[in-house]
Structure formats: structure tokens, C-alpha cells
Image (tube, rainbow, N blue to C red; front, side, top):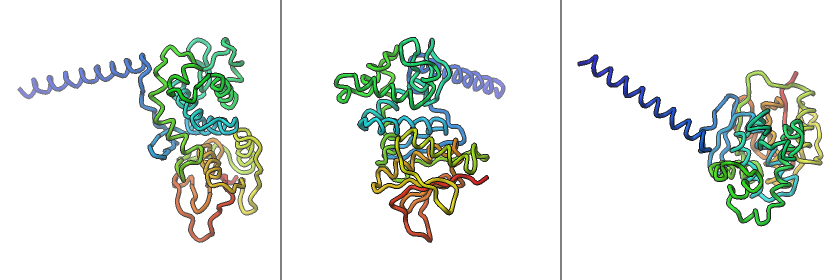
Length: 286
């Protein structure tokens, strides 16, 4: 009897596994939402909701948001752009895709989006997406999925809406409407260190945000960005944390809070006055 019982249980588990795999394939086939894989290092974004991304996804999301601000696009446009990139690439800068599609938005060179090399540049790809969105009459009043579809012309026109909630959370954080909302952990060995890391970080910040006045803090290797607006300050602070893993960022400080790569979280700064007029980032030393 015990042997028979174990056989029945084993058969049930096997059927459950097959059924689960079938659900996965069905979701993949019809564009339904699949879990975003969590990889270390990774990030958690909390801004009236919670989103978990890996380091690559977070850096790409921050760049998409920054380009939207630089292009003077409204907050709603950033939500649409992020939802589109979620659906098309899971916020990964893909080297290939359906037919000749590449990049974050799976744009096609054969459809006039640019060369493969251009489209693989996240800033170029995001700029082209925003430019196309601006040409859609009345996109501001459309549902996220409708606005995205007018640009993308996807075979799954309703698939973008499933990412609207996550995109709204990311947009609130990355546009500075939340405090200490992006918290990331980084790899054991920084991708870059010292002056090379500081130079690359400064260059990336300016490429994403446009003209910025930055300075070099005398007491550490890194950069400082002046700001008199808390919202703008948190935009830069969250961008810096989002790019911490690929630029060797050790700490980011704004106001009376500091993010640290060692802890991966924002904590109050003790023993020193707050810094409300600049965002300071320190990179790992050589």
C-alpha cells in the first residue's frame, strides 16, 4: 500500500510539473507577464509599489527616464517608454530579436529606426522612441498599451499594459518623486575603480542628463552635482545608484541620507550636517 501511495504521489507531482511548464509556454507564446529573473547584483525600487530588477535592467531604466527628462517629455511618456522596454526586451539591451529587431525597444533597422549599432545605444534608442511617441496625436490621453502600440506596431498590441504598474513605480522613483527609493546591491568586485570610474561615471551622467555642472570633491574620488531642488537631487541620486554596479560606485549621498554599496540601502548620515545642495558620489578606490 505504501509503495502504491508513493507511486500515486509521484505521478501527481509529475503532472503538476508538466502543467506548470505548459502555463509557462502559454504565457510566453501569448505575451503574458512572466516573472523578471532576479540576479545578483540587483535593485529594489519602492515608490508607492515595489519593483525588483537586476543591475542591467536598473541601469537601462534609469537611462530611459533620464533621456525622457532631457527631451522635456512629461512623466506619462516615461511610463509608456518603460512599459514598452519591459515588454520588448525586459529592459535588456538585446543584440538580436524577432527578424532584425535589436536593443531595448526591439527597433528594426529595416524599418528606419537606425543602424544596429545606433539602436544598441540605449540613449539613441530611447530618443527615437520618444520622438516617435510625440508624433502620435493624443497619446497623452491613451492607455499605456495603446500609446505604445501606436509606436511599436507589435503583433501583441495589448501586451504593454501588463507592465504599466511597474513602470509607474519606476517613473516615480527615477523622476525624483520619492526619497531613497532605489536601493541596489553591487558585485563583490567593482567593474571600475578610481579615477577611471569617476571619469566614466561623470561622462555617463552628462550623456544621459545633458549639460550638468559637476565638480570633484576634494576628500574623495568621485563627483558632486549641485542642485537646489530636492526632486532634481533625487533624480541624480537614484540615477547614480542605478548605475553603481557598472561604474564602481561605493556611496551616494544626498540630504541626510546615504546609500552604501556595502549595505545596499539608504541610511541616515550620522555625525555630519546634511548636504541639501549637492549630490555626492564616491567610487571605489584603486
